[in-house]
Image 1: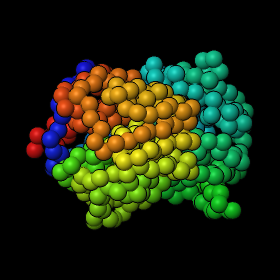
Image 2 (image 1 turned 60 degrees about the vertical axis):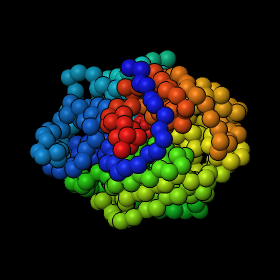
Image 3 (image 1 turned 30 degrees about the vertical axis):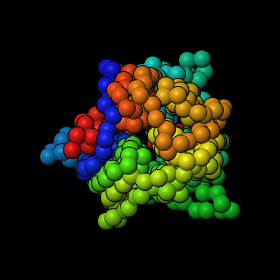
Image 4 (image 1 turned 90 degrees about the horizontal axis):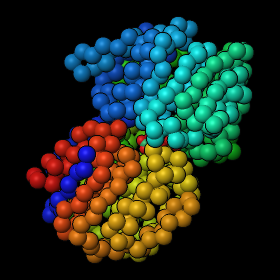
Length: 429
Ligand SMILES: O=C(O)C1=C[C@@H](OP(=O)(O)O)[C@@H](O)[C@H](O)C1
Ligand SMILES: C=C(OP(=O)(O)O)C(=O)O
């Protein structure tokens, strides 16, 4: 689908976000591990969380929906079923990496498959530690899905220092560790999103700036009955759209505000954005609140590489904010972006190129020479079937003086099925 976007003269209104994608996927997987019934409110209808949900059903979870709440009867750790068909993770790296940990821990033989994009993403990062724990994993070219997972020897505990700040890798190893008699420990140097630790209530301690998270069979899996907050990564598109439009005023209700996810708030604040947070509260183990963003003048920023894991999915849309900020902004230390649904540094560079921006592409990021008066008439954007690139290009399109076009725009549904409707509602109201 090619989406036509007309320039917006103003953006005003209030919107409800899709439920958080990362938390939804964890709610499904952790409900499978819980030996009892969980009631998950506000589970995401987006494609990735739906892929995860159907995989956990194949593993034995019984799922029904009552008035928008998912009632999930888990199997507990001891009774997970061997799936009769391939586990299809669709486009979701989170599903494939977290479920691999569960399969290895539970000693379930299965084949994990995914779409073309997912089959192009390296799984070496999880294969290595899982093999150390006793798994036998057959991967295409040793690194890519389809993955055949098997374990013929006892599960071994692992002390694992994360070589990259990845929440998927961290969660994968901890999930396998939850099935072991002895303690598995993951040592984290740079904090990445901590939804798994929170929702599983895992033991954590900080020793010399390193977080050590422990998991074993002795950990009780908590009941997963909670309400999933709105997805901060979805809010990010509106935060930037509002910040770069002169007389914008957008209210976003019920946004997840986990501090390991929302570095974009600090970044936009330092850039001079007009953002207010109201009604801060807890939604189960996760903080949430309402956000109001208004248009303002932005100035350039240099992103500290240490902040990258806490804004990794927001970098495509941040590059749009940087384009309209006074001065030169930099993103560095973000090589992980090259291993997402597409090579996102390449995709961001092509998006900026499509409007004639002044920037340089680096191996690990971008240098963007911004200008509050930057203007372009129209552009043809490639999304590379990547939801975050499609949505970032849409926000950028609002600044064109004429219509712009986004290829393969349906990819937004991977995380945000209502994105195009919300965009229309905001720009016409
Ligand atoms: O754990 C998660 O839910 C996620 C972790 C991040 O990936 P990495 O672990 O590869 O950094 C993020 O980019 C992804 O969208 C979701
Ligand atoms: C990278 C992403 O997701 P995943 O790795 O789960 O496919 C994302 O949603 O931006």
